[in-house]
Length: 181
Image (cartoon, rainbow, N blue to C red):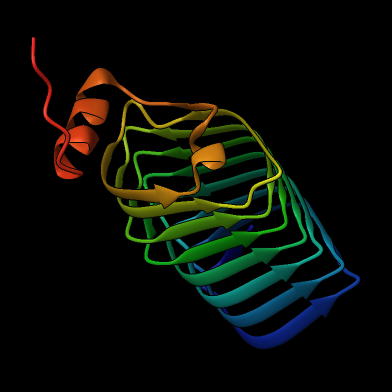
């Protein structure tokens, strides 16, 4: 286990991290490039200005952490859990997401673009802004247990998303459509 460590201004290219637990660590101005990260647990960690480019993330658990200005580009996320965390800004572009979960998170801004999504869960989270644009495949995106203030995206990206009736009625009301019984 790695405890109370600050890792900053590093480039981890062509690296592999496997079977490590980090507790109360700070990752700042870090770039992971062409790397494999698997079976890792982060607990009470901070990620500030981190880039994951062409990274394979498998069996990752992030608990009670803070993510600010995190970018995932050309990466694969499989069996990733982010639980009870604050996400200020995360950008996901041209990625493959399979069984990725945000559980009880406070998400201020999340953008998912040009990605393949095959099961993405937002469970009991508060989402201020989520945008979904130009995604290649959108299957099994579950938002129905979360509170969403703003969702944007092209119409094709909204197909495959599961919302609650309350969420649908709220969005219809916000765009000015009136329902009559």
